Image 1 (cartoon, rainbow, N blue to C red):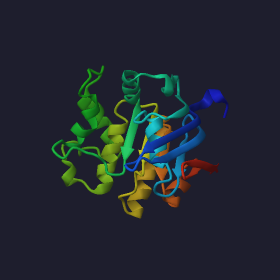
Image 2 (image 1 turned 30 degrees about the vertical axis):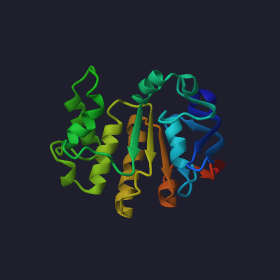
Image 3 (image 1 turned 60 degrees about the vertical axis):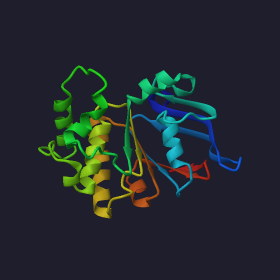
Image 4 (image 1 turned 135 degrees about the vertical axis):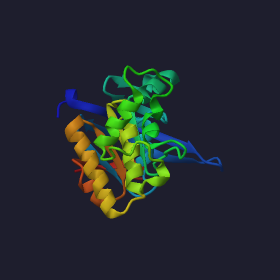
Length: 228
């Protein structure tokens, strides 16, 4: 695709972390990556390869030491802390461990990111609409403890969509699920791309999950090896 159709451009990004004995661990090294708008892309590699760090810097949860990251009209590496916070409201995050609040219903978990703000729509209605979109219509009052692992992940995906994000970052979204449920979650992510035009970046070590994506970026020891 042309550069005008690129949603994400990562150029020469490196990230290092200090460790307790005074040493340094390199999590990313000179990473260059482009993600096309409306695509579902897998970032595949073993544990510790840099997958999560890559998602964290694209999602502005961490700041790279070198290089530039542009997402849509935003160049992250030139933003202030307050601007990065504003940017994160435009990004949907899905994690391996769901991160649902146990005391809140499914609908309230979905609507939770909206609570600090006054959106121009009813948060409960938006939450119920998204729960229906992920196959949980009528389950808005259910507590997480009453839901299966796959259902909890569906709630987490609905929550990620509540702000109509320009990009969804999914970090091992099927890591705690059995193979059948993992397939269902990937079916859902692909359907969201088809129906809502979502762009999705999936970090995974599972070749079956990666094989369902439009393309695969392989990372090892913080370096991009090749893409399919």
